[in-house]
Amino acid sequence: MDTRWAEIGDGVLVRRYAELDLSVGLVLGDERCLVVDVRGDAEQGAEFAAAVREVTRLPWTVVLTHDHFDHAYGLGAFLPCDAWAHPACWDELVRLDKVAEPGLPVADRVELDLGGRRVVLAHPGVAHTAGDVVAYVPDADVMFAGDLVEHVPDGTFSAESFGTDTVLSRWPAALRRLAAFDAATVVPGHGAPAGPELVETCRAQLLALLDLRAEVQSGRLTPDDALARSPLPADVTSAALTKPAD
Image 1 (cartoon, rainbow, N blue to C red):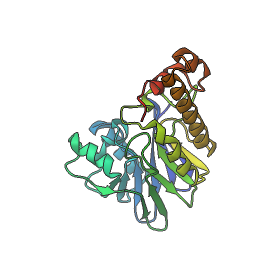
Image 2 (tube, rainbow, N blue to C red):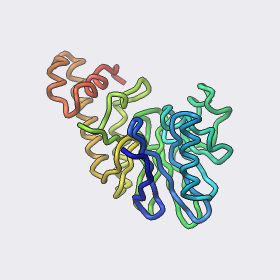
Image 3 (cartoon, rainbow, N blue to C red):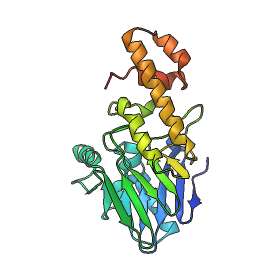
């Protein structure tokens, strides 16, 4: 996969990287632009910042969809600027010395004015992490969903989706709130943009995993039987099933 910009709506662009099949975003307004996620370290952040500058000279604002390294650790390349994230995301980045102090909070819902264009930042609830945030561009009907949804080969999630900070039991409810936006185009944190059906597909798969986990933990199913019944690949299913009940 070549690294390139793709315009998925008027003035709404996604840039995909072969490494981790990462998708990051750029939303252009009349007065400023919004950068969605910043890649994984100082060097990657600088590359992405330079790529943004090839598209626009507008001053930028940044939103982080969550605190995981591949999405957030390149922030320094964009600072100083307004940077938005959930308070739990800022807490983790401060704890890891990735930022000196928290930036601007998206505790629930924030609307940004980019000049002639509005972007909604929203926290749909604890799910992939404690501090997931999505960015919705109403006039283009595009949502950047971070790792709340994925679109990888042979399924919609990877085994890495279910980290130690994931709360599997609350994830389907978060996706129900995403579905309420009814975005025509959904940009996952990893993989190609898709239609609104991706959100419901991911939600159905998570509900299936929750049911299988409950069956295994109660002793009504063996792990092998659960793997055979799962809608997801074996490594993804195992990662979810071995998470403690939350």
